[in-house]
Image (cartoon, rainbow, N blue to C red):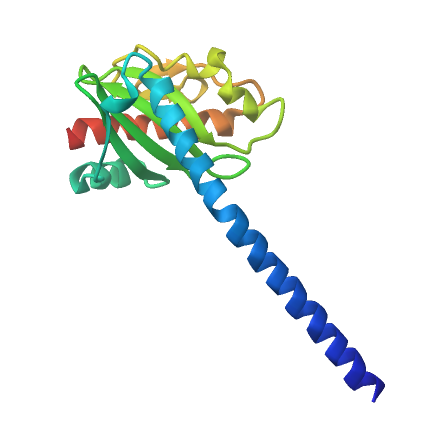
Amino acid sequence: MKMMKNTIILTLITVIAGAALGLVYEITKEPIAIATENAKKAAWQEVFPEAAAADFEVLSVDKAGEDAVKEALPDITVNEVCKAGDKGYVVTTTSKAGYGGDIKVTVGVTTEGTVSGVSFLEISETAGLGMKAKEESFYGQYIGKGAEGFAVSKDGGSGEPIDAISGATITSRAVTEAVNAALVYAQAGF
């Protein structure tokens, strides 16, 4: 009898907890979606500050560009592409090679093929090390350069050299590959 009572009590606790979690999810779902959309639009504006908010137009991800990225950089996913009026394109990519997990960046690529800006949508790297990727001293190395691609300087390789963050080479490589993916996509897709 005692076991039956405990089973019923445990079942009630589970049902109540599940209902509470479902309610919290429903309450927070829309605000989270709105915050995510606002962060995305802020990133677009950050990588193309001279473009007006009305200039941005979401495009379908081009198959040729996506295939070119998969071939060149298999650990990178193209998430979204946006046209920034007549100034260029915004390409959002995710690198699965970050030290602390996925790194999702938004990269502005001008019509001339130069990087106009880099903005981070998701990054969970080590505080004080990998998180320095969000500092302009690191991501600013990409801006204004029209390279065919970038390479972390300590790795060698072809491309415009990027100085790695001290103690965070894995993060530096992941961000560099994400930026390179945006360039590969822009070259193949536009």
